[in-house]
Length: 401
Ligand code: PMP
Image 1 (cartoon, protein in one colour):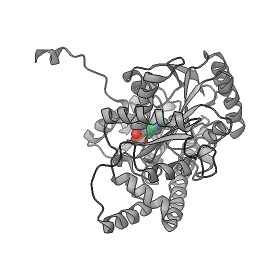
Image 2 (cartoon, helix red, strand yellow; image 1 turned 135 degrees about the horizontal axis):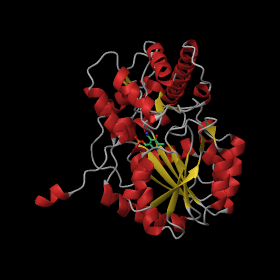
Image 3 (cartoon, protein in one colour; image 1 turned 180 degrees about the vertical axis):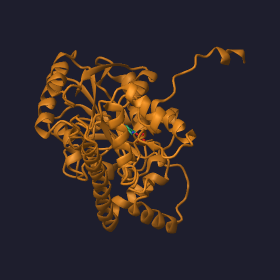
Image 4 (cartoon, protein in one colour; image 1 turned 30 degrees about the vertical axis):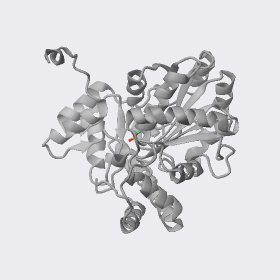
């Protein structure tokens, strides 16, 4: 077995590697602004009440633990289409979509990537935003799809580089593949406006691009299920060719349950049947059958009107907690007397603030003050609490002045 020793060591995963470092650090205070998981103002994980109630109902039903169908249960798939594209979408009909239950967002992206690699007849190049969630490049490249980038972020003005993005899309070779973040762009926290999505849609149509829409934050980003879906609903209305990859990790707090839904939009039942047959083979080769528990929870919340109502309230609570943490951080940074303009913090949305801090500054934050962030400058807002916000603001001021 000597060949194991000759395997090159891979770089650590940027996000989970940082979590390990944080856990090993015994200093106090220490602050984890690395990973994108929701935390309460007491820095505790939050189990949604609607999820707990759904679990109680499920437990009482004493359901069996047999395999779920390879692509997931029909009811789950239907409810996912109602949630994402909406009940009245032309695509929410048999023969207009092929949906499967993926292993959360990553698992959905992975099956979609393998499917495109095998069957996509256009140019097998996936354009991802610069910057993007670090796992996008890793995932596509590991699964045999090349990636290239399009401009997205204007570092000088700390804003969306809309003109740069449009120029780059305009130059993309016909029938390439492009990935968008449906809402709460990770890591920048800047999303196009409704008008801008319409412009993007027209350009995508002109270039005949195939769209992978990464929908990791619907309802969680703004607290409004419809607003966070505007990007892909606009595209669906204009018949953009697309696969939508939805994760229920953030909006249900079901991170470790690995539950999500992925939908390919199609033209006919004939197409749908063929695609499904191939997806089933792919899924069999990957994880064979999706897990039961998380999907049952989502199904229960979607079908019980009281639980749906509670869920919508809890989404607002989570979104508001993050908005309020942004406000507090901005306020405390202003109070330090910092000469920088930090106003972008409250203009961004979702889990992250892309701070423009340099790698050196971030290393100092970690070494001297035990504040952990990605060296790209991404700060995870849920790690900010009423207790630590002043400390974090002061330390950021120290390393930036
Ligand atoms: N896409 C983006 C942009 C994300 O931020 C995440 C979660 N961090 C995911 C996909 C998928 O995560 P999961 O597999 O846990 O659903």
